[in-house]
Each structure stands twice: as structure tokens, then as C-alpha cells.
Length: 243
Image (cartoon, rainbow, N blue to C red; front, side, top):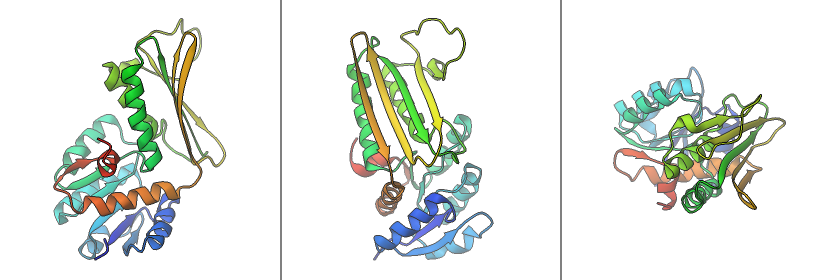
């Protein structure tokens, strides 16, 4: 039987892409919900919730999913570090895929970034550059945030190493800092570049998205996968078998 999906945030850009992709993939949509709609009444008719709404709605959605024992796929970004820590503890009570980006290509970029950060030592300065459309409300993007996490993990650095842009007389760049630069403009779906620069050479890993359908198809692939998993928090690397 096909996986029955609730799409939460159905009126947004990603919500509309999810509805189109679900139709193309012959996945039945049990409900297409947005702010103010009643999630609880839709839950009995669904196998999984796919959420691309607002970070302000995540806690209520997870509480409802835990109460109904329904798996969830979360693609919403913009949570603070402390807020996300609390939400992950709640999400761990049910099968949950939580990722900042559901593109297959981006998740390969994550794996390549981890490998590069491991192989290229501190002599290679690490910087992350991301660009999105003018309507995006949070910065850096969830994808960029994950790329930064990977670099910090591989280099045993804390978040105090991050430099969100630079201004004024900053002095020479230190080996322990990691730069992050967020660009906004036009209708850019999502561009991400990880740059490792040493004296004499640099390595650049880039992914550019031109169609939101790649994220929607990935999220629905995650929805089909998570319904067969035990309780716990997973990411797209788990779904794709990249770990």
C-alpha cells in the first residue's frame, strides 16, 4: 500500500512542490495543511507527516505526532541551537528524519565535505558561501549550517570558531576560524560552496539547485523510508545509506 502523507506547510513554496511531487510519485496526500488547520484530526488517516512550515510550529507538530505515534519528516529551518536540542529530544520518541536539505546531491556534498575536511589539514582555510532567494527568512541556510557542523566536527572546533562575514580591521585570518557568508537575492533556489584554500591551491565543492522539486522528491523518499524505521532521529545520510 502507498504511504499516505500529510503535507504541513502546503501553501508555501516547498509545500506546493511537495504536492506536485507526490502526485508525480503516485503518493496519496491524506491532508494538505497550513497555519491554523487542524493537524490532530488529519493524523488518523495518514502514515507520516512531512513538515515544511515554520520553526514556530515544530514543537506543536512533534507533540501531536508523538501522541499519535506517527513518523515525521522535518525540513523546517530557523531553530536556535537550544531550541533544536529540545526538539530533537522530543523527536527521538518517534521515527523522525530531520534534515536541512533533502537533495541527493547536497547530501553527497555533505559526505565529500567531511572527507575533505578530514584530509586537508589546518593549512587549508575553510569557508562556506551560500546564496538563496530574496524571500528566505533565516541565515545561514540549514544546509550551510550542516556543512559548518561537519567542518567543526572534523577539525575539533567549537562554534566560537565561526565568523559570520567580516567587517572592519579584522587582522590576519587565523587557522582555527571557519567563515560563513550568506547572500540573498532574486529567485535563487539554493547555491552552496565549501572552499578549502591553502597557499598555492584551493579546493571548491559546489552544489547548485535550480528546481525545488529535488528537495520535495528527496523529502518524500525520506517519508517512504522512515515509516519502516524504529523510533529515533535520522538524517538524509541514513535514508541514502551514505553513513
